[in-house]
Length: 296
Figure 1 (cartoon, rainbow, N blue to C red):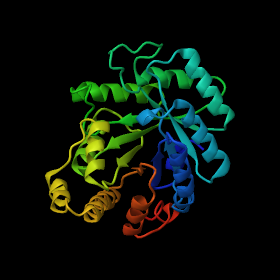
Figure 2: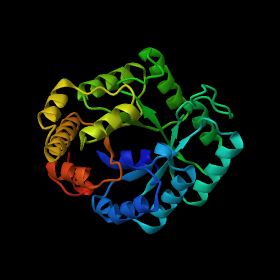
Figure 3: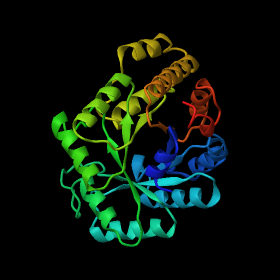
């Protein structure tokens, strides 16, 4: 089922992001947690593409494993930088064969050299390629950046880029993680002013340690850490468990506020860990996504 159809069916959707583990131990650890993720009944799960040093082949392997051996509905991330048209078509064919219904279309990180190579320069080019792919009709998601993209400091130009992706065929938007709901809600208003009516899913990542916060700052360039959040975390900096609880509490408060504002969906960046997301679910009053989707 396309994500757009799920959004038409459900008032609010909940989804998770996984990354393909680099090691066999990491793979086993994620496999052991999949039952916990299934029990939370997400609308779908996404799988990152070649992120954090993992191989691109493992993305396909994990997507196929989830589709075949679990009740989870996997959506692969697909980045286009450095790829040829033929390579992208081969990947799309493989996902079509695996009965994948949706693709999250991303540009990917620029090489350090600054030259991308391949046939694609921007995510909108990948959206075009997916729409033109003849073997299957994929639902297409794209990324949104409520706090801006570090490579596009001009927010007006950045909104033009998002509008172009939507106009070319993207039918849902998943945002980069953020910690200040005001930034997200303002960004939604700016999307509306730009004529972007495409449903948007808000990206939330609970902070579970000070080291994970620093890693988030590296991975999500431009993410703002509000002073009240930093005060909470630094108050407990010598107590890792209290830092974890403070971070999860902040994310839970974010989610409750977003639901009060009628957000269409929440996408949890799980880092392959289920316990923080489980705690947030419980704080919202339900252990399962099905209990939240039409009652928020």
